[in-house]
Image 1 (cartoon, rainbow, N blue to C red):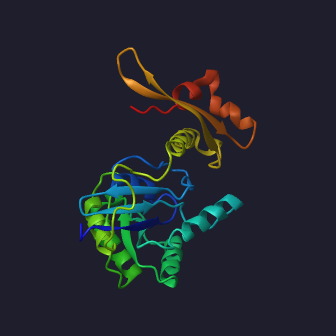
Image 2 (cartoon, rainbow, N blue to C red):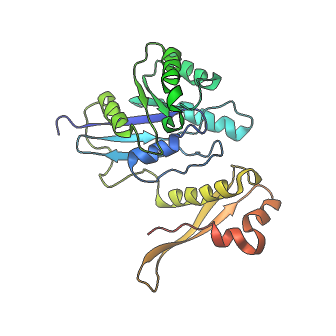
Image 3 (tube, helix red, strand yellow):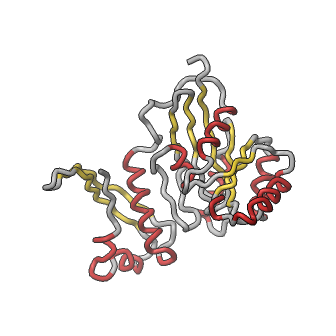
Length: 265
């Protein structure tokens, strides 16, 4: 265990660059929700990867953007605060797009805070082959002397093992910080509440604001007649306006019957 390494790694980037999808792939389990709706991530959730050579604690963050309301301001503030006290930052970008003003804002923020970071060009599978060399060159010029650029496709898993190897090079020698069987620091209730909220965001899109909240009331292990076990969850979905209740219920309870449920085999 003399060469065992452990440490904290923050994933930072604009909204919808695939940070949550990437952290799920790196950890190997779905621990954080994904959605095309911006600012889906709220909590500073930690995903834990334990291997024979070390333990990485990944910190997921909300997308950094120009906030337009109080909730957005808080989320961006939390994302920026997540770089403090970590060993390395993974700056995640959408490689299907050329570098933009939002990316430059985050880069300047990291440089100003003298924060060491690895550049991850995510969604590489969406970049047409004839544009890949051009896109890579654009990002190399954008980051200048930073050579820590890793091409990744979080949805396909491409480049993820190489990224993990890179991360371990930045971590100090140290013991396990969490038990080996843990994959997240969040209690089960929080994870299940987020999974229900993910269904709300993905199925109602713009009709229900992303500020919707979920409270888990009860969890019960159930047995089906075919012998398969499942977890029954009683949850309360909290919305901003009374008019949104009808949308969540759906015609003849359509959404309640088909979407607002989470099963765990």
